[in-house]
Image 1 (cartoon, rainbow, N blue to C red):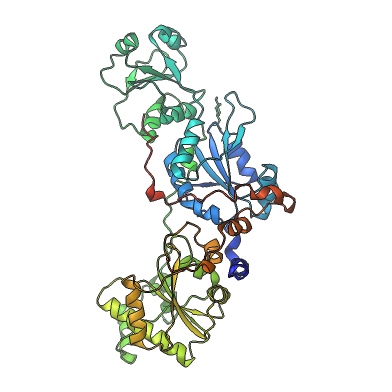
Image 2: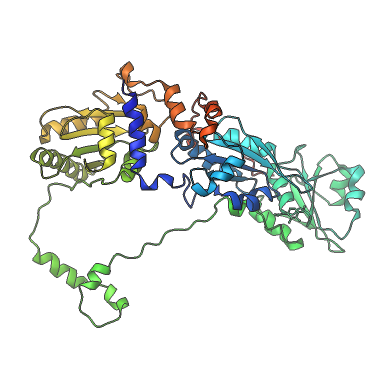
Length: 502
Ligand SMILES: *[C@@H]1O[C@H](CO)[C@@H](O)[C@H](O)[C@H]1NC(C)=O
């Protein structure tokens, strides 16, 4: 059985990882990241319904959920808040505990009380797909929209001072978008909805098509018929002429920041090499002639090989090759690149990389992975690779790996192995669960060759990995959703639900 080794791999890889505590969601993620403090302000005190994920960055089901959760966040932008709390963060542990979190991920829907006060918090137990999450949250959005009928029209229009808006529509239901607008303007503009069959209302405002939004700015100001785009941003802007929306808009908090990292130019070294007395600004603009001179002086090397980049940290190994999105990677494990066998293997790969690059063929990346990299050692152990030099191909996305098992690392032999991978021929093995714990957990149909030995008991693995309790005392309950099947988290596979329409 591979089992004990595999679990050890996950642990070893993770403990070797300085970034293991890092958040699952990047700064640019549409998922709002909160902690105990900001939860109060952004979620508990909001007029918006939120869904909050309590997670640990190392938990496989959390990683599987990530794409779906981010997709849900995108779909709910402007309608509800989609937030996440990293319970692995020491500072958040008391908060996660106080929320009764006992396993990861735990999803809770937080619905504000209409008149204020403590919100209602319910566990979300539904499917972990973007569409299921979106539907569940949309169901819980508070409705401040007033139903306007002919018989109630006068009453609705009675208070002349408060600005009002009426959406005339053919629909009998209120859209999430209109609900969200009513939340934005709660206490500022009264939002109403009238059906096309309300003849008196329709006639009063001369409505000719549906949907049509009419703004009554208040006082004696005449009604204004909106004729812009039926999108949240434009609608809010239009209504803002009658009063400022509440400060709390999920459109902003659901990560609309589109910061593009501007990379500083890497000219510092060439600038340093110069002995000019000019300002640093001038010197950073390295004259072309200098660079050219340097090139001319260097010996001319005819390239027939591309250098194989090295992966030196477990972190990089995971990032490049072991996430659930990782495509095929070819990894050459070497004790030392000075070793003859290693040299030969790397040279073969370099030549191949060069050959493919020259013919502009897309080829999966090759990496040198020194065994000094703790991640490499753990991975080799998990894959049962004893050699000084080992070459494998791994596709974490599909959950398979292949072993180069010829004794000779010569160019031809390596090339035919690579070609077999390109053609999808030859023996694929199922990636063991220990790696899967870090990278993929989606059930994979790959690897029919996988022996029963290489197919670990999913329940066991799930337990050890997902349902880690926040506190040791909680272990009894912690396994509650370990048996839950992994949801297909691929966001592209899901139908779009349009809640951003009036
Ligand atoms: C919530 O709505 C009330 C009006 O009902 C408003 O006064 C308050 O500012 C809103 N809160 C936020 C955080 O937007």
